[in-house]
Image (tube, rainbow, N blue to C red; front, side, top):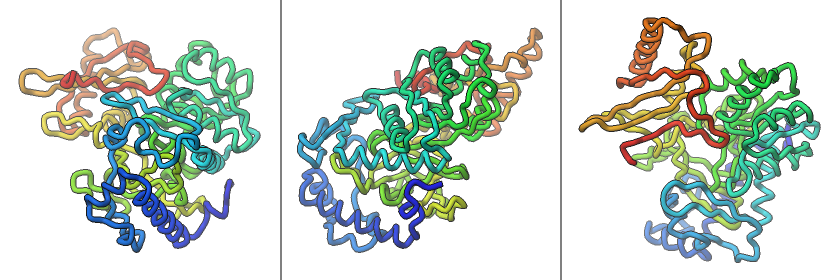
Length: 432
């Protein structure tokens, strides 16, 4: 099922031609009317006339998150304030936050992208969508909300928190789809069980749009086996607009809609553009943004491009599941470790539950990594020897996969903290 079949199934060569024309226009406008990007291009000895093909985009200079902070609040904007109809602000942990402005046109293409995405997973006007992302400065809630309304779905703007009430409404209103973080969806499942609510039997929930934090295929399997629903990956960042792009019903990569975004994958060390299939850092050029331009913006997310045709018939390139961020990578005794690798390893162990916490600290001159892991209730034993064996087994699996020694601490079910927004999985005490 398509929302806009002409655009979603346009031949690839036509899409590339459209992308080139959009980028050419964008770069010309920025060179003429945006002092920041004009100066950035001049410093790189690049002129808009040098962009003669789509591959020439790689000649353009990168944009970085620090650029957005340095131009806070509105120095980066390319429209007068009277044309800005909304602000969103990122939840930065250091320095100034990232302020993003939206024109009516920006909100329109954002909603359009989500309408296509929701339709691609089988949603339509008969659905009731519970939006359990945070509303307000965070883009997740309002993005999913307007996308749901665009396809004619009934939207329940529940936000985060009040989980028992959310479950009651899910039952009473016949909610068929939910948008939230994977950790919060797991928390909803846990609370539902404590309330005596069986998601499979007592609700009409069929689909979940899950994103805003890294999650693995193993976590998807846990969610689906536990709750009896289909979980779909959704992707976007506040700088791009917000959550926008999803997997289709094939669930083999996220469709990056070609008339909205141009995607490159680069080597994070050298900046060299990589071929489809090679894993690296994603770089995006937004083709329709009016208030807040992004040209070759380094997202920092690690993925690769799938260039093969999708059986669903959509012709936009797809990206593989985000496996982490180049700036979230932990370096432990010279070994690169991503939190997603830890999660993947844990999810292969039947006795392990869904909650974990990574703690990194320094003892003397050496780094030490500890992973606190909740164990399923049925896997606990009163025999100390059994628990020591399980601990040693998990440590063995961690070392085999990560190539470093990891200390495992076993925790009771429910002992680790739960998060109603984005889950906090890493505590790095080396930087505190």
